Length: 35
Image 1 (cartoon, rainbow, N blue to C red):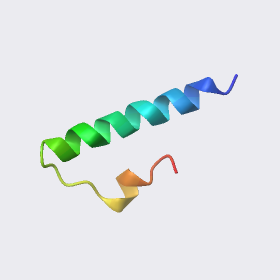
Image 2: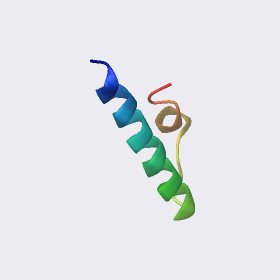
Image 3: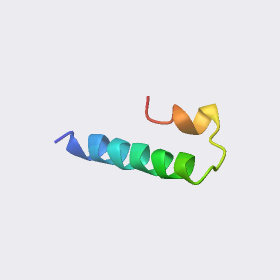
Image 4: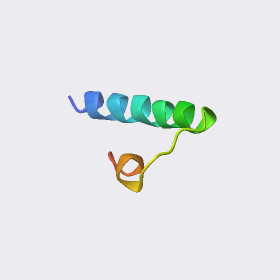
């Protein structure tokens, strides 16, 4: 099963959205973590 990586990735993208909404800086390394 290969679902867990996709689930983690979507959770990570949600986290990045929340960080952006809070005005927290996001590094390119964090942004591309699962890409």
